Image 1: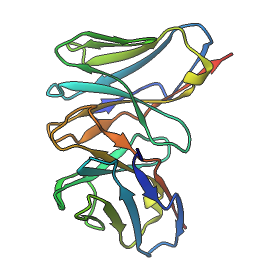
Image 2 (image 1 turned 90 degrees about the horizontal axis):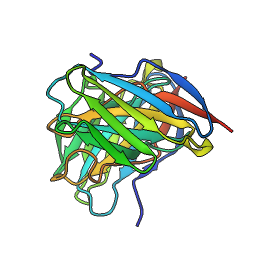
Image 3 (image 1 turned 60 degrees about the vertical axis):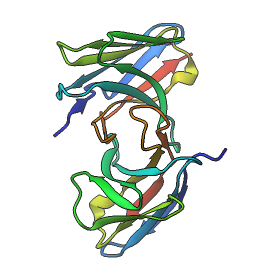
Image 4 (image 1 turned 90 degrees about the vertical axis):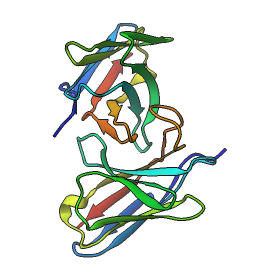
Length: 111
Length: 115
């Protein structure tokens, strides 16, 4: 049962433009959502999170938007840089801190 | 300050064999979780250890077992290996009182190939 879904396996954008990565979830009990970034041969690293009581959280070039009614969140990267090229995972923890991950979106930022 | 350390980084095993993967958590962390990431998939939760006991378990068969030692380090054991067990195995450590992103740190993983 895939409780967190990322339907776009890959995304390519030009440097300086906006990257939008999408994520859907099915479990309305999730109260926290996170985005992780993963480079090859490295473990996932935390990027940004959002609580379910908010609809937006911003950290520098990264903004996460949450639409609870649609069970949808998105990650915006503005402006995109070549170093942002990585696989991005959306994740949500249950009350026991077990994380449910999406399948990931591979972002390529073209110089 | 060392992060999460996993060993070995790569491993090749034959079908039917047994394997042990190791994880040292980040200094100060007391909880270790293990994830399996198959090619093209997101990490899937295997189990979590706290105070040397399995606290949560995902949808994995009993062939997958683990252990946590008094120094908080952990092992993941897989018996009777199948070709489908080939994956990247990730260890993540955290502090038990924290939730969400707080202090949840991943290691670089062990790449297991079963032939």
